[in-house]
Length: 300
Figure 1 (cartoon, rainbow, N blue to C red):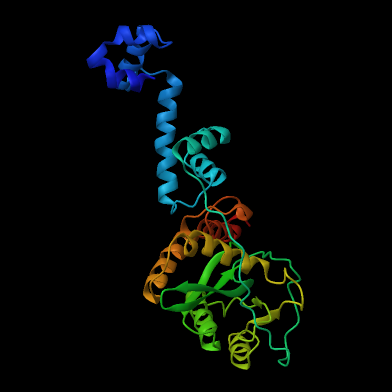
Figure 2: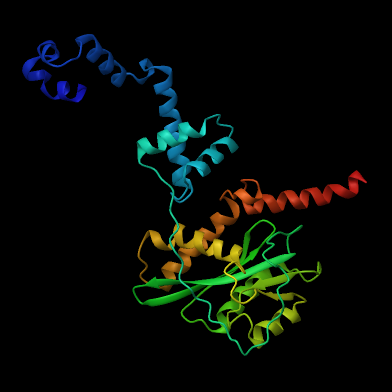
């Protein structure tokens, strides 16, 4: 209504228009004064403006994938005292929303003739320390030049991605490269007791992959047949990756996917809040674990 008055006041004047419309001239002038000087706005309006700016910043800084809960959690981490319902109201006003995960496509092709290690995880995707349990899986990406495949290796303790690889084929070399990256980055050889869990995909139960695990002193574990939850944690990471990166645009080629994956993995490990580990980033959770371990001898 005030916009209508703004558009026609030069022709008809404010008071004549207000006589026709159900609005008092004083009300119009009050709104006009507040637009000219935001400091004259009510306290709630000023607070909403400040929160709206903070919400927009958090949403933008996190790849525009956070929903209400994640934005609210991040604001609380920054000591911003705000109710979740307020965040929901202001995000709706600005048209901000989190990404929605779609239905996945099956990429596992089992080799029924290959011998498989037993399932040492049994859906219990928990670990008492880093480098105790890794899970691995891969997913597909459509590009203008054909399908690509992206493999991840995840440390279960803090859900940290420790290895990844993009490939144009599903050969064993592809998942081996992701494993080698994880081995180089984490060097779990001295700690021992590491279990590597995957589904029954032919790449993961191949002789070369199994031998590399054994050479590194890692115990292999493979999910049970016909169990849709046999590698649920790795599939969850795949789902987040697809929703937060792949499904949001079309991809021309492999370099574009590799660069976007690199950026996403870095943000996932060092910035993204994960509920299962206390709504903190994976790197922060691991750092807290090692600080606690370093303090134990001193406490003793």
